[in-house]
Length: 606
Ligand code: F6R
Image (cartoon, rainbow, N blue to C red):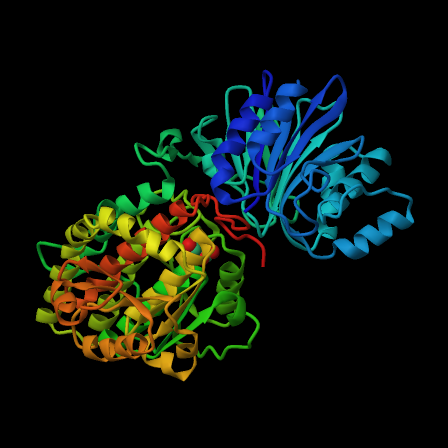
């Protein structure tokens, strides 16, 4: 979602700000802008669309100045126009903002009644006007911000630039993350560590309610009660990690990284010699857990859905599963002794974070499976279960999903052992199966060319159905989500057995049906559903292993062969063809697979 970079610099900043925005492109955006302070005035350039448009505007009309702020905007209030692009400015201040000011309407009405004129449809512009009023009333910048912050409801990360103050930026955070960076005679603000990667390796994360005054001498942080506070200085992100290597897209690079990152993740959860599963916090008490509530969004939700099957099967613990945006507002019953488990790549998804805070207020123990170890969710967990996927830049989640599954399988086994439901030989078997996952994923990747070659048969479709049973059902949902977001083809995932209760009406020779069916206990049942599709002229793409394809592949539009694997690791392995198919169909249709339209990497608004 929106990205922020700010620099209190010792030399011209607009190029460095633009470079910072390029590092934030992966978050998804639809307009961008930069403001600097020069010759005692605030000046800005803004453009709708991709950063290249902003770069063109800057080339035509350069923006001098040693201190400035920059933003990539993902439209919420008002369309993705140049006028609505940030920074929003008055003569006195310029503001960039991530999040939503929920009370912007009454604030805007109040400001208009006092004669202020608005030039955008955004919620953000009220912040510029409110601070301006304070400055015009004679307040110093820090005092002006201190007075205005309590008036803002909702979620925000703000960076604020002041007229004729090239030595100053002020940042504030509530709900949306903000990072401070420390340089040599310079200081920085960023919406994440990656934005600041080339500028500094020394950063601090602001806590909820913090605000910060950045100058040439460093940064002074204040908490929500305006007390000066220290926030730990930690290592920033490494600049090199965000190139595509020799892959045409980040998405493909990240699909190919899966064997390595899954192995990396499993190393923290398996003791190979002892053949035991472990947790990063071994003393965390899982034995007394009576119920697990899993909450997440999108692809992370589908990882949670796979986990529900595993937790119930192995640990015999009841599991509730919710998408975060529903969980928070449906008055869920959370009894004492429950574990609430949140799954997120970014650790900043606003709905999941709000759900986490609700569960904590309801007395749940909080476990978090998260890829960004410095994220808000990671910092609010009782049991932090990191995935070690590394930075995921492609907007569509791929390697993070595989690593989430690896952690969740290990957690299921830990829970089962703690609850006395897992015999030592069963635990040993689980460790052995999980340890086989990286090699099996590697084998699955070998079918990339075959999948690319058959992708054109799906690329011409208007609608696509995905079917699966058991843990292949969440994979069917994930396959449909991936195809929708990457190729813009309408797709639905269904439990194979549910198809005859409605979606079978859609079947004709124009609707490819992707059937995910590894051979195993549910294979025959899924194949029966597949035959129901074929009997109605449906064109089936069967994803199975050699035995499955030998048994049921005849007459299919195409088959995609996977290695023969144990059912436990099948979701990790079968995720690969599902991802590759979406990728190749997206490429075949000329879509922007790394930054699909309208999507954001980290969804920091509710
Ligand atoms: C789909 C995708 C999204 C995310 C969802 C949750 O490819 O990436 O559906 O999975 O927005 O994001 P996180 O995992 O960061 O909470």
